[in-house]
Structures are given as structure tokens and as C-alpha cells.
Length: 209
Picture 1 (tube, one colour):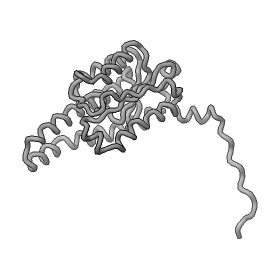
Picture 2 (cartoon, one colour; picture 1 turned 120 degrees about the horizontal axis):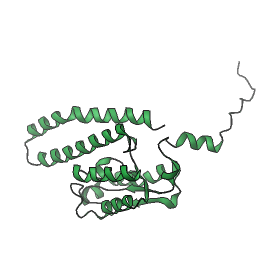
Picture 3 (cartoon, helix red, strand yellow; picture 1 turned 90 degrees about the vertical axis):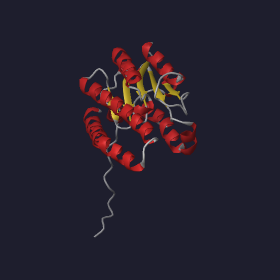
Picture 4 (cartoon, helix red, strand yellow; picture 1 turned 180 degrees about the horizontal axis):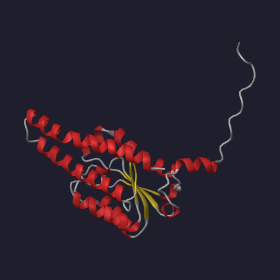
């Protein structure tokens, strides 16, 4: 028989309780007092034209910062490097701007859809990591949230940077290889890429709070 009695009302959620569930434990008040920087980049003008959905996803990261507690006026979108390769920091005004803001202790969080958007050179990547560790700046991508001051996070970020540089090398190498050689090169690196992705997802799930 179908009951006609009204369903019991769901317990009300206090706004503070909702906020506590949304904000990862790594984010502290001192992070929220500084900027959240969203770094937007695609590696060539052709990619910018051909993949507008990727650009939209990167701009949408500002909403994640707001969900984590940053006021909208303290979310800074840096997109001057659209259409430029991350093989080097030279000529990338946006990346240089991010480094300068971190060094001035103005940044609590840097968000990118992937860490490779920020740098595909280990030299540039570790320069950013060192600054973030010194000034207590967090980094976040689609896999999770990282604190470079924590050993496990720093280790994972270092591996991500190394893998990003290796991917760039393979991309450049494939331009000059026959198809069979391309397939062989990718099979050599794919297990490492899969492991990093799986480890990153598991670690992010455990540490985001």
C-alpha cells in the first residue's frame, strides 16, 4: 500500500557545516587572506582555436577557489600566456607574473587544470615549487590539492614536473619519428604516467580533507 504520510523533513544544514565540508583541511585562514591565482594556458594559437572547451574549463577553476572560501575579488586569473609553450619561462609574461606575486607573499593558492600548464621545464617547475614552499603557497590541479611544505606532496609534485618535461620531450621526438617508433616510445612511458595518475588520485582523496 502506498503511504500518504508526508516524508520526514531532512535535517537542515548550517552554512558553517556546509563550508567545512567543502574546504579542504590544507587551506588555512592565512591562505584565504592572500590571492588565489588561476593560471590559464594552451600551448599554441591553434590549440586555443581548436579547443575552446579546454579554455572554458581552465577559467572555471575560479569557481573552485570561491567554493573553497576565497572572495571573488581575491581570485586573480592570469591568462597572458595563452598560445605559448611552457618549454621555457622565457617570454611567458603570465608565468613570470605568478612567480613575482608568490615571491611578494601575495598568493595563497595557484590553480591549474594540469601542472604541465605551469611549466614543462624541471628548472622552471622547481623554481616555482621552492618559492611556494618558502611562502606557504598551495597548488591545485584537477587531481587534488598540494602543500609543497609537506614531504609527500612535494615528492608527488616533483614527479609530476619530471613527467611533464618527459612528455614534452616525447612530443617533440614523435614529430621526427615513424609511426612504429612513436608507438614504442609511448609504450615505454605509459606505465609511469598511469602510476602517477593513480597515485595522485589516491593521495588527493586521502589528503584533501
